[in-house]
Image 1 (cartoon, rainbow, N blue to C red):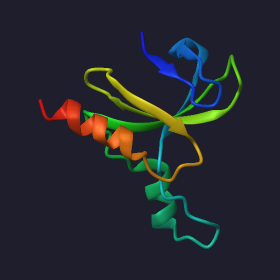
Image 2 (image 1 turned 45 degrees about the horizontal axis):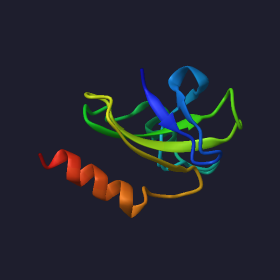
Image 3 (image 1 turned 90 degrees about the vertical axis):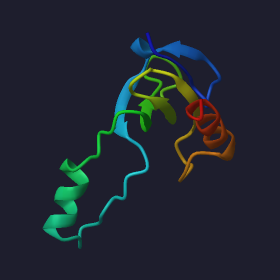
Length: 102
């Protein structure tokens, strides 16, 4: 079972209380984008095994969105952070580096 801490309300909850929102930090394109840009945004993902940044909503709690860094192969959670952040905070990047340099 995946356990994530909502950075908005501070509760550590199981994934059954959360709603997944897909990959985080995607570049979104506006109405003047090309068909190729829109196709890339909608359909083309790396889906790599390993470290992944995801969007989650605390559906059965505060209802707010947040971001999580986790490993898709081992289910290790490196940390969670506010959805308004454009990149993972330094302490999460340090934790990823520390755990993946084994």
